[in-house]
Image 1 (cartoon, rainbow, N blue to C red):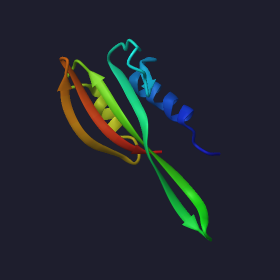
Image 2 (image 1 turned 45 degrees about the vertical axis):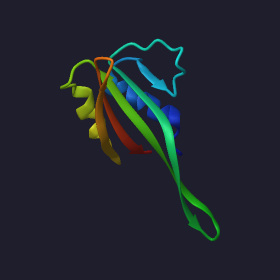
Image 3 (image 1 turned 180 degrees about the vertical axis):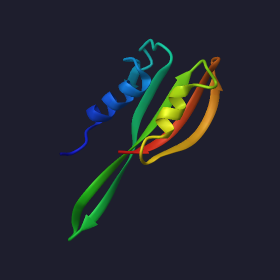
Length: 102
């Protein structure tokens, strides 16, 4: 069975322990923290016989938390095919960005 973005969404909800998981939220959405924000960043195709044999979607996942030692960061970083990209602080919130192939 193919993995879908909705499957990933539920995995992230379980990691966070709340429904504060947002897929490409518009600026008008009022987020609650801690939160996970994610969006599609790449589609990687594998070709065979001149057609797409397999696809992997890459998602940019950002954990947003007031706590600089957030356990959520550890849980996300332990996901298969997940790579830490960077950390930055904005509006007194810590942002941890990852790339996940799913």
